[in-house]
Structures are given as C-alpha cells and as structure tokens.
Length: 48
Image 1 (cartoon, rainbow, N blue to C red):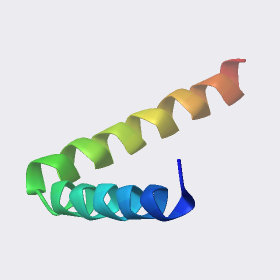
Image 2: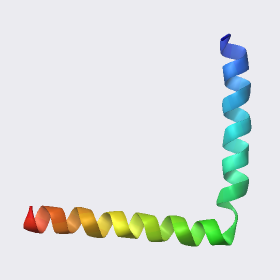
Image 3: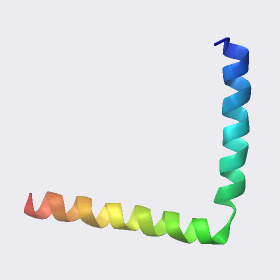
Image 4: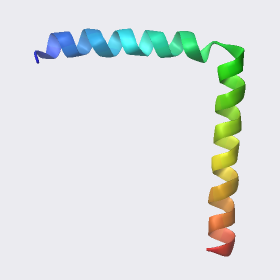
C-alpha cells in the first residue's frame, strides 16, 4: 500500500478518535481506565 494512502487513512482515524475523545462519556471512561491501570500497576509494584 502506498505511503500516501496510509497517511490519509491515519489522518482520518486520528480525526475520528479526536471526535470520540471529545465525547464526555468517553473522557470519563478513559480517565477511569487510566486510573484503574495506575492502581493495578501500583499494587503490582507493592505486592509483586
């Protein structure tokens, strides 16, 4: 696949993700996910 087409596809995907990311429900979900990951990582370090 030519690089140009790949670039266009990735730009479209990024724009789509930005639209999704601006959705407040997604923002809440993403922050919960990040927070949850941080907790599991911390407990792994502590009790690992």
